[in-house]
Image (tube, rainbow, N blue to C red; front, side, top):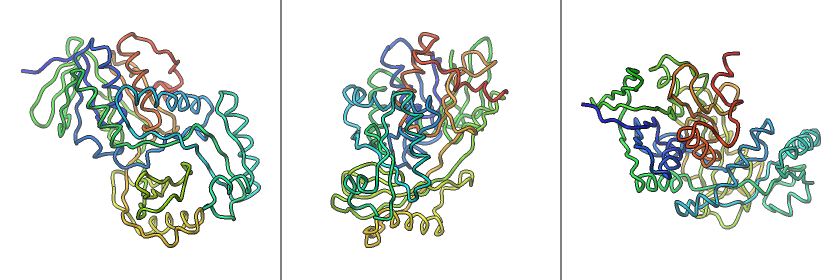
Amino acid sequence: MSKRYDIVIIGSGVIGSSIAYHLSESQQEEVLVIDKGFPLSGTSGSTQAWVWVHSKAPASYGELSMFSAELYPILEKKIGDVEYKRTGGISPFFSESEREKALMLAEKQATVGIPIEVLSQEEVLSREPALSPNIVGATYSPIDGNVNPFRLVELFIRAAKKNNVEFSFYTSVTSILKKNGLFEIETEKGGKYTAKKIIFAGGPWMKELASLIDIKVPVKQVRGQILITEPLTNLIKHTIAGMRQADNGEVLIGYSLEEVGYDRRTTLDIIQNTAQMAIDYIPSLANANIVRAFSGIRVIPEDELPIIGEIPNVENAYISVMHSGITLSPIIGTLMAELLLHGDTSIDLQQYSLSRFDK
């Protein structure tokens, strides 16, 4: 016999767990979260965990990111300390030709209220003295920051469980059928679940999951490799495009983009390029020891914007897939809960609908 739920969420990463928590606040629905692995075994546990806003384009996407960043202090009061820090974000550039692009970015983002300063070399180095004197300038915004992804996902799940959400880990979904208006979900363990509504939040595995209901989702898997240094003393104050410093002094470095499917191996060429990028930004890092290298698989929609909302032509099926899940998780959880519980959202999500790809 199958157990019946009001809502089943497939995926327990930062997006799936945020949706589960925000749904659970109302305590109106019986909710189950299914995951093929364990929380943080996928993308959400393999990230620098920036809460990054200021360079997100178009401006409407930057605005959505800003709204989400503004929710982090409120979220911490509700679920606990996720080590969110609004450090401010710096994105350096190395040529005067890039300054014009920076000024255009600042002008566009100002239309939605995102504050950006275009800094001179002197202003950049006064804020981050360790940066290279070869840097010509930078964009800066006080909104950017970072968070501890392990604490974030853990506390989302803990808070959801407290509100009676159920979780089933190491549970791969093998089939989804719709009968009599209900979704019948089978797993490789032999478990069967029935749901009135279903949410696909499976990150890099979205194509395979959506194919179970004959839906195509235009996303790609992109590997990112990250280096971690030994603990260093007070090197970086801000979140910098390409690196940040954790509370324990370790510096996380990297922003590679490789379309290699699900291959999570690290490679020498990218490690070398990443290390050189770090030295170009902060010359003193040449003397630091690297203690770890790892990679994660991002999921990026083809137009690089989130896909959120109802799945066209499949009633009561929903999707939530995007890059920058750490940044967006507070707002996505909020909006998806509104959509599932009330049928509407406080922010118009039409531009993020899966139906945009039909055009």
